[in-house]
Amino acid sequence: MPKQSIGLDTQLYNYLLSVSLREPEILLKLRQETASHPRSGMQISPEQGQFMRLLVQLIGAKKTLEVGVFTGYSSLSVALALPADGKIIAADVSEEFTAIARRYWQEAGVADKIDLRLAPGLETLDHLLATGQAETFDFAFIDADKENYDGYYERSLQLMRPGGLIAIDNVLWSGQVANPQNQDESTQAIRALNEKLHHDERVTLSLVPIADGLTLAIKRP
Image 1 (cartoon, one colour):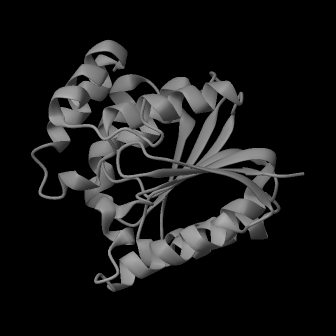
Image 2: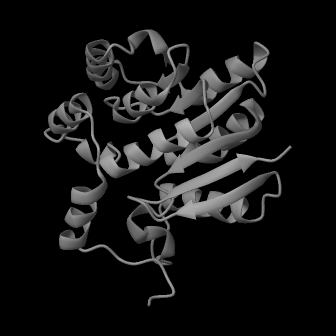
């Protein structure tokens, strides 16, 4: 038996989906529309969305945060898993991309759960901290510009309650984090945060090799 995480070729990946994916019709519809978008690669995979729904249910999350919305697949995934009184504060800078998200939130009947803030992510997080919302969030998902990942993480950690969970996307960056020849700004930013998190005693950590890599960090008391 292998002593490391198994690689997924197309055949095995399709098998994984065939025996595990329970994708609501509204999410499938959104995923199919986004597939034709010029920047469709920014959308998370369906199995990651399902994994995030499981995590949100597992920790009993009610108040959540998302940095980077795109067309709304991740926020819709989380919203569907939240209780009736659950809330997401969602930060993005694109009116164009999030207009698609808004349509699907409305169609799914979860628009009242999602508070979209169209402003730079750091600005939104700083505002939440300035208005006394530190340690009031249960869950955060970070999936925006990589150069600001460290800032998003530090602010999200302040906003999380003890025991709250931060999920950080794209931490394997299509394998480029392990390629020493790649020194572009985004890759270096992800590498730096990965190294920092490895030694950050403020959190309990696991990097999960799902989709493009998802780091899970639980805030310690």
